[in-house]
Length: 153
Image (cartoon, rainbow, N blue to C red; front, side):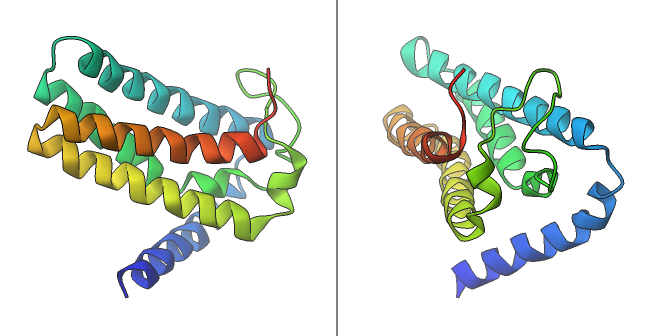
């Protein structure tokens, strides 16, 4: 039941934001999603630095919350027809297959959202070993989409 509620929430969010996003130029959509992913990557890097060095619970919690917030932000609405080519801050790396395999994209996105949310929950406990394990799961989930739908540089 919880998974159905999550799927419904994602669908409603995408529907609600679709009309607003339709007003945004394709190059701006590309730039917005590139910015979101860059900010998410920076925060994943902060978590990794804490896991590899001196662990600071507050920094990890803040970074994990950002990752979860971006994962839940509805960025999927920034992938409209015509945004498979073009520039934001740089040339988009999304493969055309992304726009043809909606069910697979949704499956991977839901898996990532689940793992990112779990990362935020685990970070709140302050258990560095548990954060390290969940960090790995979150990274693998992110990589799943990259492997299938992102062009190499």
